[in-house]
Length: 152
Length: 152
DNA sequence: CATCGGTACTTGAGTTGTCAAGCATCTGCT
DNA sequence: AGCAGATGCTTGACAACTCAAGTACCGATG
Image (cartoon, rainbow over all chains, first blue to last red; front, side, top):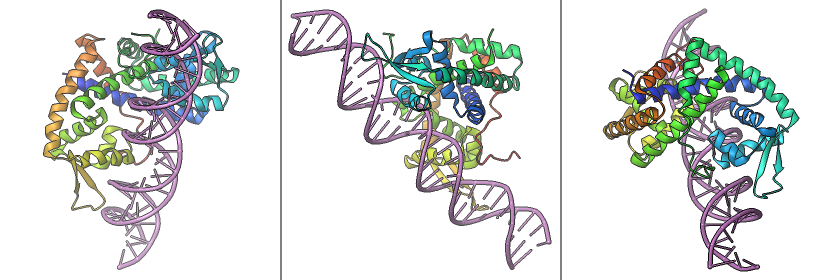
């Protein structure tokens, strides 16, 4: 009935709609995109609120290059700051500032709310859970080629 | 257990991985992206292999602008061609050429295969089906703002 | 201790999409 | 007929990301 390509197309369509909804609300309410929120969430969950930029890239499914570019504006507006590693001069951390952590909390609340509304407009709560469960196994492979982190 | 925002993040991650996998195989084998395949699929399914550009935009979840830009290369390499509407001089159709239809068939086979492999690496067949079913209700709302089709 | 390969990051150029504005055309109202 | 507003499409400016190449640094090996 459902062939896999068809499922892939639905996944693309659903994802696009979700991102637009999230972006629109987050931009209006907090001036920041869903992509930015994902960065802040990862940093917020990390030990000491900071990560190496490479690890952040892997966690986000971006290239190192993409992280450099995405972090620029966040540093400029003071949500994230650069930190050096005293042991290894190659690495630069991205660290959440106090301001960043504050905004993160507000944004998380908004985003929870939007996601809740968006999913429950098309699914029951139990269905959202099983969707989450089904998607869990599917994120691992298929990172961008360049500068993959420790996985050889 | 699974809050909706978390499900949203998983959805994003899974989608990103899927698109990269599909893009990589399709580009290597046929020189054409997943985004392009989506266009060809919609045209192939449409009556007479053609659609108004606005309708194509709505079907793809893009803006009219995005469609103009995406169609450019496909016209240049002869997979799609412009057709005028004799009744209404505003509208231009995008129509699949014979070459385009041929390539579409080959690409569909590749894409089916990739999607099959990708999903079944993390799900059973039955789970893929239920994933497809869950996603069905979720694609409707949240189109781009500009030039929405007939929905007022 | 020189150097060679791997790792972390940045930067230039290209791609794909958005939004805002503009043009041509159609439609309904008077 | 004539005009106002909607509709279809394209274009310029910009945003986010990729790849390829470049810089800087680390660590092991001769």
